[in-house]
Image 1 (cartoon, rainbow, N blue to C red):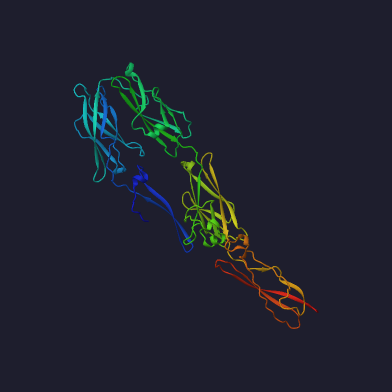
Image 2 (cartoon, rainbow, N blue to C red):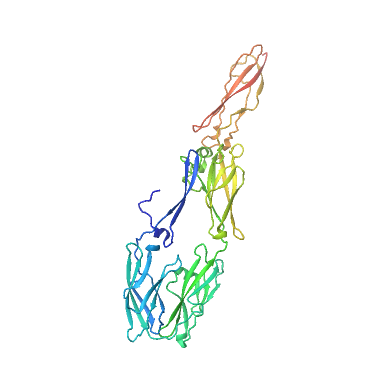
Length: 505
């Protein structure tokens, strides 16, 4: 395996995914034998990205009445690397400030978050603003770091903050086929203050991604969280929403609640079937058997698709007389659902001359179960059926055609073993005596266009001999089946008795 000059960029291939694995199949051929190898390449991360702050200046507002331990969400620097090379620590450059930064780890597919934690009570009259340095550092060797300016403004007192009845974290389960408008949660945060100081409005926090804002709706007055768009478990199974409740008094106070929405999978995806005819080394691209491709002709024989590329119409070519267990095609099945809904079983129907052989998970081989004979069956119409194990199960039916290429394996035959002809004696040379007929099972209608109607040519030579005491001529006809395109010829010497009954002129 060779890596090209462009190299591998793990962040471009899998972004923040914990693992980056490239999987593919390799088919090797040796002396008409084949071997299917499943290859997985794991791309390891290196520390090639430094943490990067979304903004150079980060403004924050904190009320002077905020209690010790109050948390204010921060915009966290991002690092394109993962695991140990990713973001590890976020701290303040000033060791004696009344704040501390705490970095929190969330779900593996969700970026980390940080809160500015209040360590002591604030007095706006003694100090109205704080200018701090926010330092982010990864865990690489050597580590990389970035610094942003954090400006904290102290607001005048608003004695109480809104409070969520569910607490700081709320979890809800939602079926992926739930209709738009379904109610997920009624947040209903309360503030004991009166007037504008107790009037609470709701909004999504800055850490709520745009995709979640599009799929979920939060009523700003009631705090009702509803479904605004269709969700798909196979695309994303968990959403984390940061909900912010804030009063409308002077120097508003706010509280945040993390809402975790977990989707429940339903069996809403039918299995997929991919059929790939395989080619042996040196064979035409569209057919795994060079003789069959030359014999059948047409679009399949001249297709520009490469080995391992599925052909239009899912058609395979196999030469007649191919040995048992000959490889015809690779069948791959998949299902986007998970669990039992994504477990697929596959079967092949249509004729006992072909069978489906399991290879790897979700991969099968179509092989011959008997040697095909084109003169008996020239084309097989098969059916592939893939069905998942959901309740109720979903299935996919795919028609599949296998054509048998012609081989010159039949010699011509006379229609009769003995011909009796009456003729006058002393006929001049070249006089017509009789017509003999021969046939060949290689039917012109099933031959390539290059051969045309002259694919079968029969030549007959008359060999005369005198038999004592009999006025009988014996003729031996030599039948030659000639195929164009430099293919082999079949010769058969067939003695045919031609009895000549002479009469006086």
